[in-house]
Image (cartoon, rainbow, N blue to C red):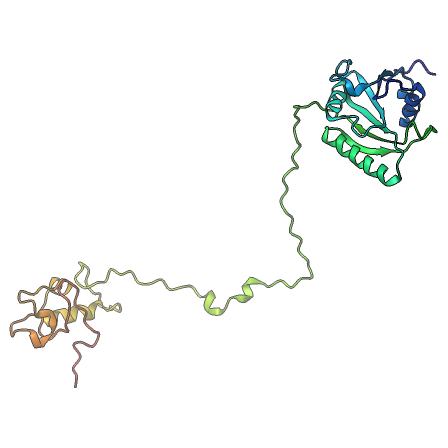
Length: 276
C-alpha cells in the first residue's frame, strides 16, 4: 500500500448489531477508487436507532449504508449523511435481497428517487465487482453530494445578445421597386393654389386672373351688394333667405337663390349668364 497517498474518510452504517469488516471492504472495492480503498473505515451499527450521527459535519468522503431493510436509510438518516459528507462526497447504499429480479429493480428505482429527493446528484445503480456471498450484498445504488452549500448563490452567465441574420438567396426572384412606378407616379405633383383669393379680401384680381377672383368680383359689382351682405346675410323681415317669392320689392337679395341667414350666399358660375 502506498502510504504517500492521502487516505479518504469512510463511514459505514448498518442496522445490524454486527457488521463483518469484509462486507465493508468489498463495498469499498466496488467504488474502484484507489484513494478510498486505502482507508480505515469507521463503522456504526444499529444506525437506525440514532437521531444524529456522532460525526463532525463535512468530515467524511464516503458513506456506506449496508442493510436488508427497505426503510434504511430513512429521511432523517439521509439528512444526517448529507450533513457529515464533504461537498462532492459519495453515498453508497447496499441492500440484501432474497426475492426475484423484478423486486430488485423496483427497490433500486425507489432508492434512486429517495436520494434525489434528499438533495443528492447522479443517483444510479452501480455494478458490483467484488465476489461476495449473496446473503451479504445483492445490489448497490450511489449518489453524490453537491459541491455547493445550501443557500449559496452564483452568477449565471447570460448569452450575448446577437441580432438575427437574414440570409438572402441570390437565386430568389427579387422585384425592383422602381419598376412598379408608372409615368404618372414619376411626375412632380402640382401643389394646390393657396386659398387667399377669396372675394372681399384686401387683394384684388390681377389682369390675367385665372383663379376666379375676377369673375366673383364682377358678380358682386353687378348685384350692387357689399361683401358683408353676401358673407353674412341678414334679414329684418326674416323672409329674404326663402327666395324671390317671399321677398319684397326693395329686398337687396332679390334675384339671388335661397340661402340660410348668417351663412355665405353661394353663387353658381353661370349665375349672371343670360338664359336666352
